Length: 266
Ligand SMILES: [Zn+2]
View 1 (cartoon, rainbow, N blue to C red):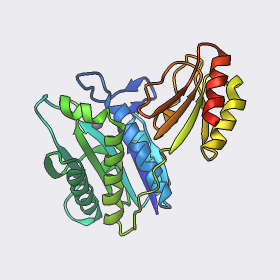
View 2 (cartoon, rainbow, N blue to C red):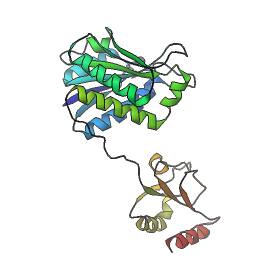
View 3 (tube, helix red, strand yellow):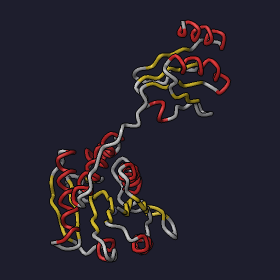
View 4 (tube, rainbow, N blue to C red):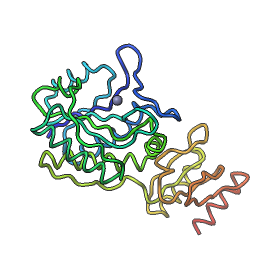
């Protein structure tokens, strides 16, 4: 099965279209990319061939989609209106047919998963619904970026992940394709080095932790995201990362650090 997943708004032939912007500055184009990338990854893990498109020029989107000839097309957006407006709505071009079916299944999954207000399935003559020729196309508005509490949800990676899974379940069910949630890519444990000079002590600690992944802090001492999201983080050298389940093996000097590591290795 082939799908086109369009992350609403983004780079244009001239300039950049951020889409709607939330009260704290979150851009629609950022949120649609974050959710969209997760949708793409989940569909690919289920055997889909996926073309991901983020393009602020609508004509470019539908030209690429029509060339790709997918089984279905999905455009992901965030809604925007007055701060009080809230909830989820999903669009198809017209009632009847697979487009409406996909819209209904996605809408149902999104509402059940997020608990947000069900604004229903709607029909509209949008460009990406009308110029996508020969296959069903839907557009979903996952929530209102103009609503402060819904914008706050959009800033949570875990919420984006739930939304992406809900979209994939609805999308797949409407097209009679089984969908399985993949293994989470969160690491059980990771080792974080201060610099790559700490590699040898890091390798010993990683071996003790069942050959877990080893990360090195960035030049500005910040921590790679996958290390920070691990369930347990063993930090060798440098300051605390603030990780909730951190083992900090750090001394004032590199000799103190080496001693802390030796003690940990036992
Ligand atoms: Zn939009």
